[in-house]
Image 1: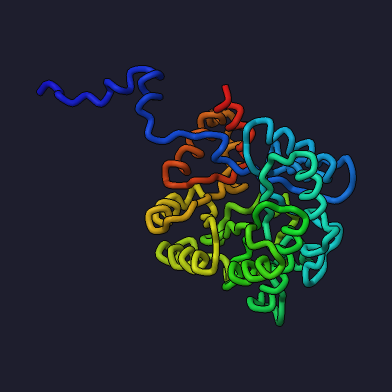
Image 2: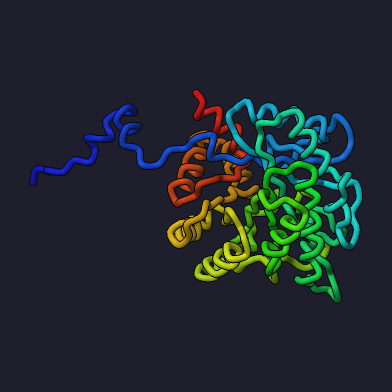
Length: 323
């Protein structure tokens, strides 16, 4: 029978494909992660994440200028401290590396929106996201430290804070602390549905945050659970989260879609280090087209419902989109 419906008619060339495209990407969608470390003139490439670096504050400011010049509106700052201890005191030190980086970036690149990761794992000697007692990560005592860290970032000039620790109640603790210190206008982007994923491996090299014992499955989510993500997101919104995040992104597109459908708040998704490194490695071996794979992955995350995408591909993708 002669086909009456011919969907190929509107796939014939790039012009018509572009005209009817349902999902579009923009540099405005991206947040680019940066890793600040102590010292001067340091730019150390992260072996498992080609094109990404640990950078001293002087170099990270230059990098921030490049990011801004590409039309990317925001960066997410992580810190590699000068020293670590049991309670992660460098995390809330007003002279800490992230606090210094915030001040310099806001001074030299005022138009760039600075978000800071709020967690303890980069700063603790044991590599876990909270206070340890008898080999266990204690939830409630950790909340005070996370709140102190968030306030220290706000005082340094951060535009937004992003708690990633997955302690119960941390969004409320941070919201109360920010409000009490006069930062009621500082928004919170919570890592609301953060899974205990195998795809974080390269990041742990980047942030030097590998746990010294055990793992993080007692506080990060079980990858098998879908409904639980909606509960976690709901709780964070009730506690005052302005934006909620799903992490990782590629293997959790169903969760992104569920969250977008269920809640009327902006949804972020983190295209994490392992997802980035897999594409980089496959391209290096000549097995995949890096640019096409990158754009396909980012489009899929946007198509699933993400309003914001945290990605190490942000600069490369922006260059493609800006052509």
